[in-house]
Image (cartoon, rainbow, N blue to C red; front, top):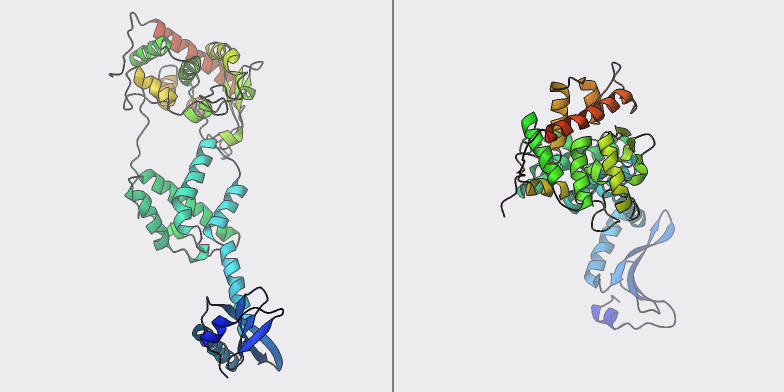
Length: 405
């Protein structure tokens, strides 16, 4: 006699498993725990097997009969419903293991640490812009159209530069998946020209000696915390990337050798870098040591000793001095040094680029060793510090500009 939904619903657990039979091999298995599940008996190659359809009442009697009939049709055509179900499960597991997020996290781990700023940006783009929309998708199923739709969301909030960075990050993940045999093609490759163009803007900088003189006089008259005052002065004297200065640690300041030694993972080019210290720069650091060296690892700690100085600290100091973002930025000290070291002092571009930690290569295309031209660069850095002193000391009666309040 065929099973009814009323009888299935009323079935109570017993001391042992028991079955309520329906038709054509289908039955409801009732366990002592109260769990009820649909099973089906069938034969393949003369061997009796069981096919688990699912639990009741999540799967109703009518739905269980539909799945039973589909399984019987598969058996009649030479298939095995249990084997098919296991294969589908395995495919789902494989797809999950080959999802964009899983592969992206693996790529980041294999890639290793680069610069702290770049690593943080990549992590933010993956977590906030790509994983919510592509993370669970099998990577080989993601089409250029899928990726473009995701990038359009970023463009929609006006973050054009971030959209381009996200496309670049996705491309790196796709290429890693191809290299490891889990994708056939890079979906980002077909999106050339599909995003709104990125308008390149140069960091604002002061490069005229007379204007640099006023700037340096203003910097040395600026009153703030010792940490901010030192960071502002060293931005001009050392012209590092702002993030490299903010994250500077005392263990990286080699007083005996009169230089800063930055490890590769902190650098944009992923190459270790040396910054020779002029007398003026060394004096500023030694003056700061008693103030911050006992607070933690950072030369320029923020409000919390466990975190570096805010990325806006030097920028805000320049604003307070009256310099707008269109006139001077923390990054602009690099352009200021790049221009004047070549045009005023005639130092070889190769030395300057090396000191800027740009990708400088020899005739064979190899990156220069960090100690390349070191003695020459040491002399150059002292000349630069002396030149800045000469400029600022030559300015009479300077009243620093102040931002309007």
